[in-house]
Image (cartoon, rainbow, N blue to C red):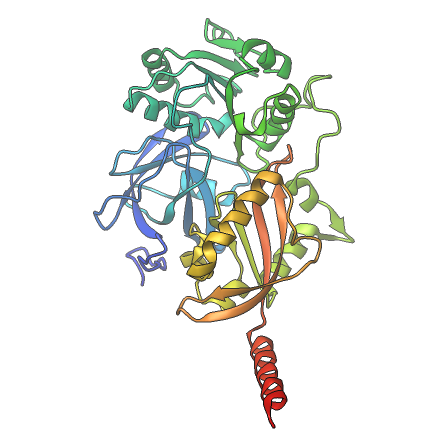
Length: 427
């Protein structure tokens, strides 16, 4: 189906992908703009928990259909979502949103997902640590705490270049006052007159963070560019913060905190390589990213990537061919859509154990035969292997599975076994 702008629209299906209208744009800083999104059909949006994100689909002339994840930057209100997007100079979708999208523009959006959410109780002090546009889930969390009249012991620490790049300034001050939050905002390019009781000129360092937060008991929520995560997550882990108290989320390789190498002695020693760095390597004059894209798009096998909660975040054409679900129908949904119901409990027991332990029995090329489920309800036979996806600190953030449909071979073997059994039982 097509809307008035000529863009191809996807159907409103049980996948949770629905058309939303940009109700209004709100300029938050020189580089960040918020977009308030309302369901076009008039029904309430799917519920979310503060800190979760949306998957957005947009058709860009000359570039085709694009998908991106954006954190919902407001607490649930039952009527709209809000995303707050930094305009990246090389960002295809972020530039389109800033420069082209207007009120009444229609976007396709999948249901919220993600596990970067606050604990249900206030037993421990909380530290929210963010850089650049990484403050968006923190704003949503602060709004949710205020709406629920919760007042945990809370520190809000944020890093940005200057007042011009600081988003949600007035709102954050209001929320901090209402919740009794201790705040510290670091301006890496502070200008005259910007430094006050809440603003610190310069770069945040791990030493400052460890000296000014309750390392022995606090629960940390860290969000920002990859380089920011690579500096602070390993430092917190090395200082003794266990995985269950260390939560983090990042937005790719955007580096809006530092424009030069970190000061000597502040970067973690021998930082682990990231997916972004590995994809920048070349084989001859061909990048690993180009190789990966070619294999994903052309592989006959299904390649399915899920996050730590088991929600699908990547679905290649091979997966569509084998299981019947389109990419739009699969993204954001649970792996349950391809697992027959009798096998789900055992699957999720193993999945949770793998996420917690960081170890899998089915990596390194070992194959496992399992039943699968197609979009039309057919039972098929699969062989698969998985690879664990880990962040710079070694925490499992998802799994990539390569699955092959072996139903014909399985049926042949079953028929052969039946024939052998009949021959053996014959007089």
